[in-house]
Length: 212
Image (cartoon, rainbow, N blue to C red):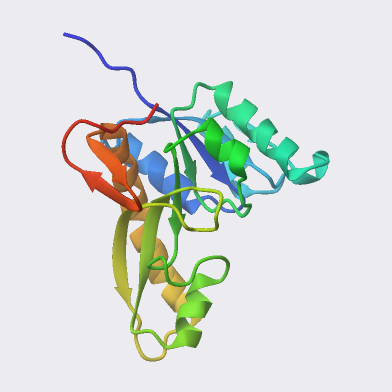
């Protein structure tokens, strides 16, 4: 019986790393067949780096200010990921845009989790945007990453009702709880293969798509 290698994930984070922790928990309890090969952050004080070190996961700091151009920064992150044979890149609260060269290095193999029902409210402060707009439903989206901001094909979404009296903090907390469930499930579904991208749509079924 052939034993398939465990897919290696590279997780990019800028802050606390709660979605990184959710991915690790899904791996631990068998919901996600994968391993976190490396965690990369652009901030030296990101709690996610300490989380990785405590679990014995390689943790790399790649600071934007150490590079003259955004392209050089992207190249350094790509190098860190390739050094650990990463198959799928997961942006778990990574607060930097990735350029064309980065996306070309991992074609259809970069996922991001965003706290809105894209294409509504891309970019920063999505929860505040939702409240300011007066929507009745917010949510979370997992999508493939392309150079345009939050514009890649959508893998999975889940809605979160907006209730009277919601604040940015209360809505963000409920969306985050959904993210922690949605992101590992979407990662697993993409790693399983059997999907393809038709225009902007991710179509599941068949055996035409895989990562790596």
